[in-house]
Amino acid sequence: MPMNGHNVSNSNVKTKRKFYPNLQVKKFFIPEEDRWVTLKVSTSAIKTINKNGITAVINKFLKKGYI
Image 1: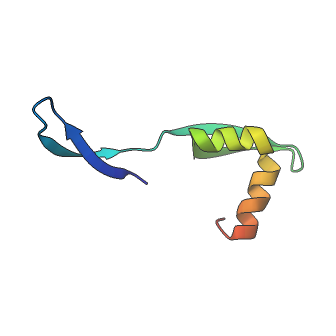
Image 2: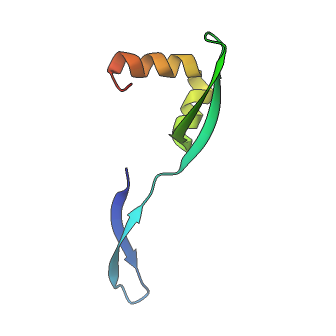
């Protein structure tokens, strides 16, 4: 979800702007199901998936009720 903020000029005039998340479309292979899944995830989520594994992340989201 985008965050709100300000652009600040050299004269300290503030104008509204949005900070958008760094979203990427990435394909992940799930070996248990022997299939590829395409997800639109942030770059921080890609790092988490690479660290913990796609299966662990999916199971965590299922447990919390996100998906």
